[in-house]
Length: 248
Image (cartoon, rainbow, N blue to C red; front, side):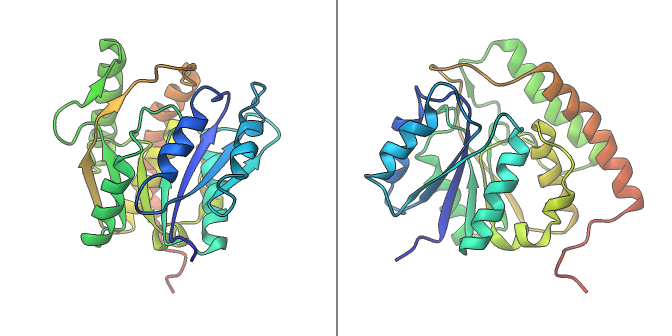
């Protein structure tokens, strides 16, 4: 029987992490399916995933793209796949173990039992739950979310979080082809749009642990996009209120 749950994991040069991540997700009792979207990693990440498909042929899928096209575009491609295949709960997750695979169960349980439309694995809803980050990066991330809250009024404490569970009706309602941003601002834009549309959103506390293998994909360009993108989103929302696609 096909799972109702799909975990989307974008990758670029995650050879050191992807096998362990896949094995851990596949071992969870909720029977999550997993979609890896690889941006043609030169380290052979996609080849390793293809080898693992021999073991998890019914539950592990792979999309290989032509190159680095941005985090947001990877998730949008994953969302389209999830909706086409009929998944009810769609998850975003990093490949580097900064998100604990065990917490997928926490997000799923919160979504189902609480009947929430969007559940966020939050670093900041109960203090600052970040491990192994330099203090400068912790402060930058924490105050970036405070900045987003201040500019937009959104009642979410971790607006840049990349560990998320969507009910399919959220993704069906958002005009995904109109999503503007591809970096960290993508995460903000999706949450902001869902909030403005009136969906039920819950933050659950998680512990975020910095990667121990591989290299971070964060860049100044991505951070700058997020800072400027927030202003764009707020101004646009004043003149154009987001409407659900299926609204008449």
